[in-house]
Length: 235
View 1 (cartoon, one colour):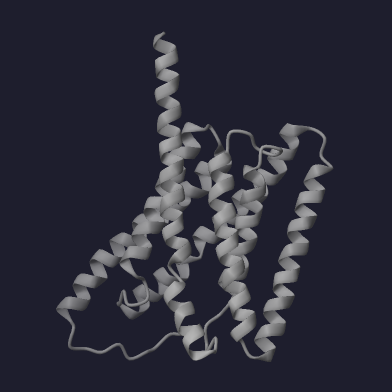
View 2: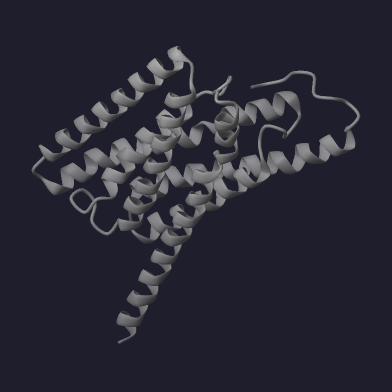
């Protein structure tokens, strides 16, 4: 009886962490909406880059495939969050194709096709692996590598904050949401005994803490030295 109650509580905690991660991830998925409202209003992608959305789509597709029952049972919440993320990224890419100039349209369309071909190759290749454990290992390693490289991307922003001594290009809510989402999936991965989830999200949590500490330090410095304008502008 005690073991049954303990197992039920364990499952509830795991699912709660996964659901929290899904909710927080949704906040990150909608964060570029203000950018795309500007793109639609001006009928131009201006100097915005579509590459982050291409990469995010590939990451979501690979992680979504890892969360499917055929690859990784008991990871439905990984499947749901990345399915929603893939839809958002696809919409953003389509908007880039619609409102970009001709070179942007061609480049984005070519990259989108490349992502879809690569994802199809990952799916078909993994389905050739008859052993379920080996299949999970292969797709898990791919998803883990993809997540780690995605979480490493804020290193460029961290470097920018240190160089400019300004948090202008590192929004607090975005940093906080990323930290909370990574922490939620870190707990989910630990409770689910899944290293392919808790290792990359552990790295994301550490980087999130670094961003929040930098925000606290440099936002205080900015308030103390608010008379000096930011000379260098970054798109």
